Image (tube, helix red, strand yellow):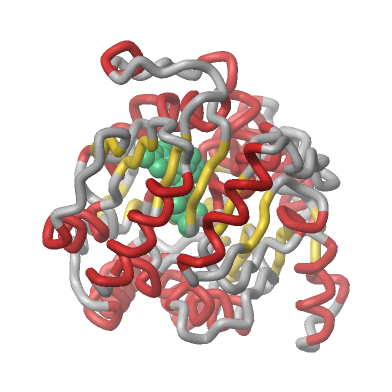
Length: 366
Ligand code: UDP
């Protein structure tokens, strides 16, 4: 059985690494199973793509569709055309898509419409309810044609059931992003700037911002960053800037002695920084999960989350996008009132093994 594993953007690479490893282990144990890694090229620069392959030992892609940058529709169209052409020449038996990026949606559509290839969605069923987020549209479209849902939470299971998905298609397995986190934790790397910026354990803030609602308007972005600087008790604020944000941030001209704008970090460096931080401030989805597992206070500059367990169980709190909510959250942090949190069920480092075991069973592989 040939499984296509699709990856296109930064969070995807972290999620597919353990799936590929689990497929390989199953193949080595004699099962008739193999994979083809399809990189769509949605993220293509070294800092957002190549470095992850070398650093967390993801094998080189078997195919690269090299779609490059573009609008939502341009990228969707290019990925569908490229993946359809591949499937027409060399079909697969199952297409695994992960997460919620454009590649997730585009490849699931191409697979279903090319000989009705079965689609498995890893991280299926999560919903923010916010239809202005491109990711939410990707989730809704992908899940409407998915055959097998591998889910990260009971909330995701309930969302799927509410939308009419049959229970037999839902497999609650946990979180593959956390498989990678546990595996790589012993290998985290202290970045070279640690000494230059005179950083100390639990005495700096690490932040990321890349959602359109926060970064597409220069005035809004400047206000948010300024408020974070004002609230941070002069602790260093380390801000690895996503390429999307970089374009706009340079126009704001924002500077402060304790604000360090840097390029996106490699995975092992970034998570070192999270693990040793006083707090994380972000609008990412995946980072709220990683912060939860590492027990680091996490402030999310969004009104909604598709990962509610990071708030109900974990260390995450939604501050919304109003800059006025930032100072009170920092005050709570500095008086030591931040919740401690616990790790959500099945986020135990063995999710990918469970996914592959289920696939072996579903397809009756020998
Ligand atoms: N990440 C990284 N370097 C950075 C920022 C993030 O390696 O400078 C990793 C982070 O640890 C997580 C993933 O990128 O595994 C999250 O990606 P992103 O925030 O782009 O996507 P989202 O989770 O919001 O979809």
